[in-house]
Image (cartoon, rainbow, N blue to C red; front, top):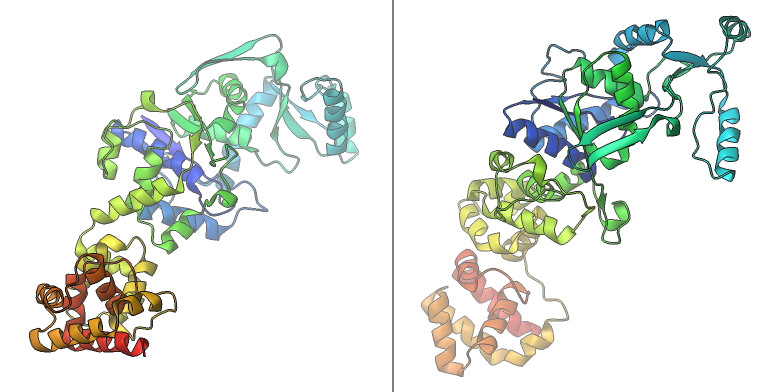
Length: 466
């Protein structure tokens, strides 16, 4: 078995094309097969090396390593379409020699007018065959005029293209509805329809999982491969990812590139656990590593309904991934800004304290600033401090002076002296020590602050009420 992922380096990778890569990688891994990476960079105007490098970096960061492709090599090199023109030309020659393709001199304007007329007549827009029956003399005459033709595939009339889709079941297309299509541009380069099919066949790809937007391309690609007597892969077309409103997933739904997710502090394991379940059913609802996800992956469990993006689910799996990280790993993820603030020797205690309250590095930095820099109270919490009263904080300061920063002794002392308990005990303590209504356990807060800083914060709370 060999699967593939073949992105175009025209922008940063997003969740939709990452899910395609993931499903192909999981299928190959589940069947002990090969996951191939091919770069489809024939769009010279839009393809950029920076995007090429970024997508490979993203895949490696996610742990989706390819066994054949750029940087790895393989028997089907090269793995950049821009370097495979000689291969495409070889097969063009075969199609032309057998009369299965012909030059087309129709201009874009002529084609646009023809499409408009067809649509006005409630007909499906397809090539009308204007150049299909040009004689050798007519072709030579047009070339002598300096006209540069495209090359069109001659679609056979009155036939059906049938294939069993792994996701959508049996598919059947009437060739009369397809029309002759372009397989070579006027500059000699190969469009997607042609080079994608030829590359899959010549690279030995056996399974293709891709978006359902490619479903109508498949009969055309099958015809090309059959005409060239090349092997045809098994296809599976998965539904697109949509936003909560059912429209294609976009930035307005909160979708971000993998690069942006990485920079925001998302973990690869969380992203993979989320996407693996977006259009694929797993009986196990628990967090799984990549190997376990692959073992439980099955083509039969791919869904045929649209997969709806849910930001909250992505956040859920981010938290699950953090729970499975070691303390050292989380400390590393918190980043240099946090590292600068947390005193030497305190990083393990800090991570353990804030871990339940941290999903991203920015939140870790928030708590590092609260605990290890000067604290300021915002206006919204001062009324809550006032409810406790200056006597509360004066008593708390005195207990810490006498007993140290011991949470249990502090609570018992305040209960005995002031008769407070529950919310009237714990909320003022949290507000005075952190300026927040919610956060890490107070015992761990006191351990990190120490007696002197704890006393200062109780004094600061008293001063704030003056």
